[in-house]
Structure formats: structure tokens, C-alpha cells
Length: 458
Ligand SMILES: Cc1cc2nc3c(=O)[nH]c(=O)nc-3n(C[C@H](O)[C@H](O)[C@H](O)COP(=O)(O)OP(=O)(O)OC[C@H]3O[C@@H](n4cnc5c(N)ncnc54)[C@H](O)[C@@H]3O)c2cc1C
Image 1 (tube, rainbow, N blue to C red):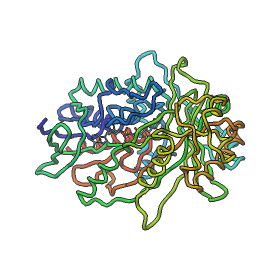
Image 2 (cartoon, rainbow, N blue to C red; image 1 turned 90 degrees about the vertical axis):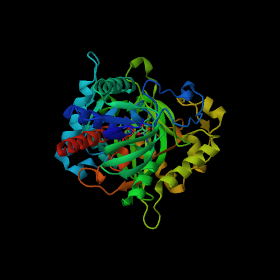
Image 3 (spheres, rainbow, N blue to C red; image 1 turned 60 degrees about the vertical axis):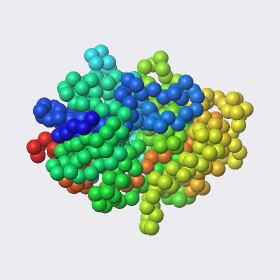
Image 4 (cartoon, rainbow, N blue to C red; image 1 turned 135 degrees about the horizontal axis):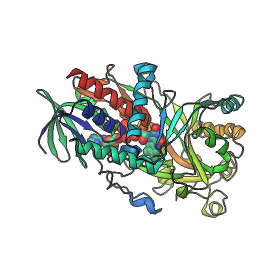
């Protein structure tokens, strides 16, 4: 594969794809490649999809491959800066919104005729109801693609990139980067290659790669927060008042006992709970399809508790992983599931009780006891949050509500960067892997922004 490109984008998720789109739109002559450690989007198949447990593929097709971690997501593009990252702080509200809206416009361009994409706005009455119960409902415009349309739109975007001369390099993990005159030499799973500039868009999954890159180039890194918690599943009707009006309730809460901040997010109406393998650790997540025929009678969302570590500890990712590993250990390599009623009575859920549950689990997980895998502080925060949410959506704290664990989000390192998201001359870091973003819109916006900075400078 020895070849020299003007720009190599490492990682084919939304950040990398939008960067390639932005570069190609502005400069048809630029030679661009996307090196992606996973498969092509068409070849991404999870062997556990038939309800079997995770079989620990060397490269997880759920989190890796063209279209990135968001390939099978619910495709909720939050068109704002109130959550999903801190791009507004980095660029200023107006500029961040300009690029977030441009992501929306690219999605529109690749939406096939006849496919209707739903958009949701804010709702004052629901915001007030939450405020009256010590909860803060975050509001933002949301473009909801749904899993099926999201994948279709990503496939169309990828095809356009290919047709316009962007080279796609699947199964091409970049292992090492070294400076050479005029650019960088990359050691990849398919052999060496070179580029004048690099856009690193490796997502959460590439945390170790980014850490190593920064260490080898002497780039300072700051430790970031970690969020640990569970995926919660119940009957869809319980949250319908919210989901029918704003689609995705994102709610913040400050817990009474520890005064910690928790958040309810990643809501999936009529959705399913899923398992994902992050470097050998299986965690819970969730998504839903836009196609009414694929809807379930459940909804699911995450409740996560944020922890900000202070000196001297600086490895929040390992901390979060160690608890997920504990849950996998107890769950024989799988995610744990527990009824809320069992959790508050201090007993494990067993197959018998799960079999009688009114909420039918949408993920085959191991019935067990989450209190054996979660620290007391986080467990207390989660239980308090469920009772708080029950006040605005009665039934949330029902005995039959299911909690899957663990789910965690880590954004452990935030390397030093300039205003163009350049971590050193010729290397740009974007998306979830930058420690700045936590979602599709802002990752995509960073890709478009960096593409403009690179082409402006040419
Ligand atoms: C199940 C699920 C549901 C989600 N739902 C939503 C949602 O509805 N809305 C939302 O806003 N966000 C959602 N998210 C989060 C969203 O998917 C991410 O924020 C987004 O994908 C980040 O984009 P990215 O391009 O930065 O990274 P990613 O999408 O993670 O892409 C990074 C890519 O880089 C590749 N890579 C990593 N290391 C290397 C390497 N060394 N060499 C080559 N390639 C490498 C990976 O294989 C991966 O494909 C969801 C995530 C999951 C897992």
C-alpha cells in the first residue's frame, strides 16, 4: 500500500466521513484516504445479532468499521450545543452552530427522495414539569434518522466519497505514526504509507491509539470525566408523553445523598437494548428503528453518574473498565440484567423472576445483581435518579423496570490543541477521540470545520 496522500483520515466514523466530504467538496485535486480498522459498511455483521452472547471478535463490527460507532445507532443528530460535547465552548456558539447545521445539510443531501426524517424541537410545558421536580430537561432541535435510515444515509455518503476519488482503506488499523520530511509515515495493518497531513478521527474506541500518539509526539493531555451507569428498559407507554413531543428526553439531576450529577440520555422509543464489545469489555447500549414494523413495546435510556477525578489519579478509563469487567465476570462474559424491584430489595434477579416480568427484555443478558458490580456511590445515584424520574414519568420506578449493566462513557484524555483542533503541525484530532465531542452532530461538525481549515491553508 506504499503511497503518499495529501491527507489521510484515520477512522471512518461520522467525524472522518464529514472531514473527507468537506475536503473533497472544496478541493477536487486533493488525494485523500480514509484508513479504518474495521470493515466496509456492507460487511459489518455482528455474530451475536441473533440473540447469542458476544463472541469477542478481534474488531467489533458494532463499534468499528466504516460509518463508525454510530452505524447502527438510532441516528439522533442533536442540532445544538447544550449536550453532545463542548464544541460551543471551543468555537463560540455561533460558529459551532454554523458547522452543526452544515452536518444537518449534508444529511439532507444524502437522504433518499421519499424518506421522511422527523425533527423535534423544545417543549416549555415538559421543561416546567421537570423543573418542578428538581429535574432539568435539556432542549435542543433533534433530527431523528432512525437506525435504518441512518445506515442508508451513511452508505450513500460513503458511496459518494468513493465515486469522487476518496480512497477507502478498510481493515487498515493505523498502529504507529512517525514524522518524516514533509509529513508523516504510518505503520498500518496493510503496510506502510505516508501523508502530508493527518486527521485523527478514531472515536472512543481509539483512546489508546490517541494516548500513544500524544506520548510519542510529546503532546500534553488532560484527564477527563467518566460516566458510569446502566441502561434502563420499561414499557414504552411510560415515557410516551415526552417521546411523542420531543422524541428524546435528556434530563439532568443532582442527587440528594452525594450531590453528584446524573443524566438520563440516549432515549430509544420502541427500541432494543444492545451489547457492544469495547476492546474485550462488553457493555450495554440501545437503539431503535424508524420503521414502525421494527418497533418493540419497550423504550430504553441510559442513566449515568459522572465522576471527575482529581490529582493524583489520572486513569478514569481504566477505572470505568474495571467495573464493566466485574459485571462481565459475574455475568459469564455478558451484560447483567436486574429488575429494579430486586435491586432495591437487595436480591439478585434470577431466570425465574425474569421470566415472569411484565417488561420483556430485548437483550439476552445474564440475570444477576448489579449491586455486586457498581460502587455504592454510583448505585445510590442511579436509584435516586430513577425515583426522581418517576415523578415526571410515573412507572419508571416500577419493580419490573429492567436495568442492564454496565454502561459507561469515557472521554478520558483531552490532548492540548489549537483553535483549529491541531495537536501538532499537520495533525488534527476530531470527534469523540478528541475529548471534546460525545455525539454524532458535533463529531461531524468538527470534521467539516477541520476540512475548511486544511483547505483554507493550502
Ligand atoms: C449504540 C450506539 C448508539 C449511539 N447513538 C447515538 C445517537 O443516537 N446520537 C448521537 O449523537 N450519538 C450516538 N452515539 C455516539 C456516536 O456514535 C459517537 O459520538 C460518534 O460515532 C463519534 O464519531 P467519531 O467519528 O468521533 O468516532 P467513531 O464513530 O467511533 O469512529 C471512529 C472509527 O475509527 C476507527 N479506528 C479507531 N482506531 C483506529 C486506528 N488506530 N486505525 C484505524 N481506524 C481506527 C474505529 O474502528 C471507528 O470506526 C451512539 C453510539 C453507540 C455505540
